[in-house]
Image 1 (cartoon, one colour):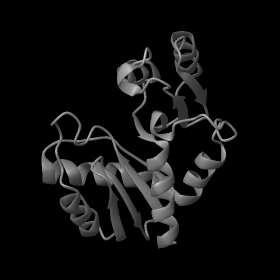
Image 2 (tube, rainbow, N blue to C red; image 1 turned 90 degrees about the vertical axis):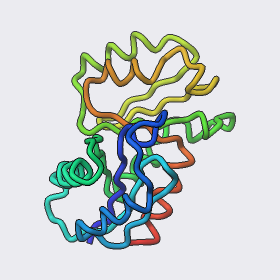
Image 3 (cartoon, one colour; image 1 turned 90 degrees about the horizontal axis):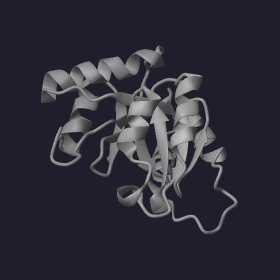
Length: 182
């Protein structure tokens, strides 16, 4: 039974799209997922499923959230093995001066076009460092996301695919939770 890490986009940010994590966990349980655990208040749910068509999970969850809470966030997911690969590909792994709270992984629902990646590379000229993989962006914001020259809203607009960011501490914690469920 696969273990899945589900990441909701734009939940509990600036007072909008509010969902209590207990209610979110209950919703996932109502969808017959097992071992459901949330982590922090930003819409992270780790669970196991018997579903064979993992590509259908985001739409199924999005529909359920819309019915229950009245809004439809994008849901992006990775299987535990995929999240292990995300961590293994960390382009900053050998650098000692990285503040993990300022290092984000942008999880994309699908691979963006090459023109989007080229455009983001052209825009990213400040102190931020951006590295691409087919479905993730690794971005180091040395001055913090709130004071970045490269705004998250710009990244979102340029990539043209649903994307949600999690800092490195959250990414590694989500994998630890998933590994306990496996």
